[in-house]
Length: 206
Image (cartoon, rainbow, N blue to C red; front, side):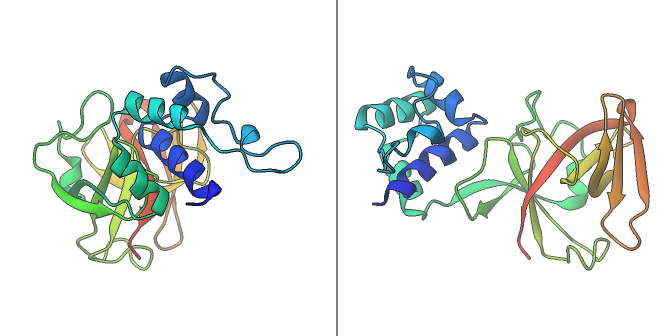
């Protein structure tokens, strides 16, 4: 067990629950700075380890058992996340009000890594529409529970039930501008009332 592995596992738990390191500490009833990166190494450069009590409180607060924490420390954790064919994600009522996938209609896929949250979902590309960036059979994993920023790759569901994949060029409270990933990358401007939801792509099986 390495110092960095333990802290990475705690970071993964925070990410899974949509929290920052300080948010996880507060949820666990600890000082807000207990898990901050500045607390992980002393002024003399010696590694500081989280206490067993702080780990236990974080696991209790997030509902994660010690066996899963050990898998996160070892880097062997695999999580099942909801999976749909890409076109099917345009259906209504597949997500709850918090952007978390519902149980209806979803299959399951394995997410190869610890950094996920409860809103993660996978879409399988079924045709050549996004070549050469994404090919038929690729899985793209996205989440609706993180903020999106300029240059992020995203999936956008429009109010007309179309699904768009692009890179954010500009955004404001009233407008989102995307560049298509395919071809010459035409601009795709969308007004806020044209958008149902936006999900940030965080991984692809390429």
